[in-house]
Image (cartoon, rainbow, N blue to C red; front, side, top):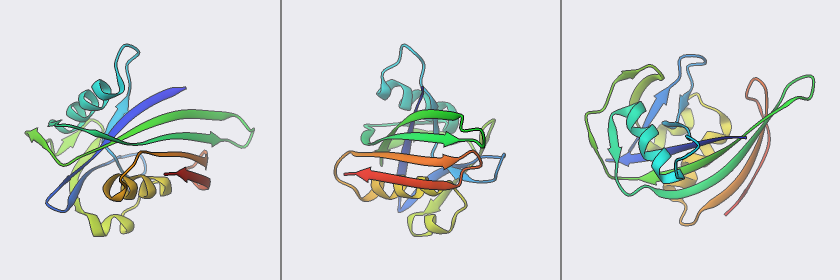
Length: 151
């Protein structure tokens, strides 16, 4: 199972998101954990690599599993550790190998093209007080089939 760590960074009522070139969807900056890293080390490293920003005091907001099934029933599975912060420093990149970085007002997140489950994850990271635990089931082309979130 692949493990990923990402972070919702909010500043001045806006969230920094990454637009991936493959679908043009907006995503939460972060990426794959290395085998020897802690989850917190991974989120800090991945966020800096993708954005140029060193996040400060990231707080764990969610642990989620994702299952993707194709037409033959084969499954891909990964686990996401989602963090939140409102503190960071550095020189933000505008374009990276991963895509385009842009700040978006929180109240406009619902209108952005993205994986449907990411909307729940972003909302909880911003508004939730506890760590959420969730599971998302997608088709291979990222149509959300079902989800459950325990808060």
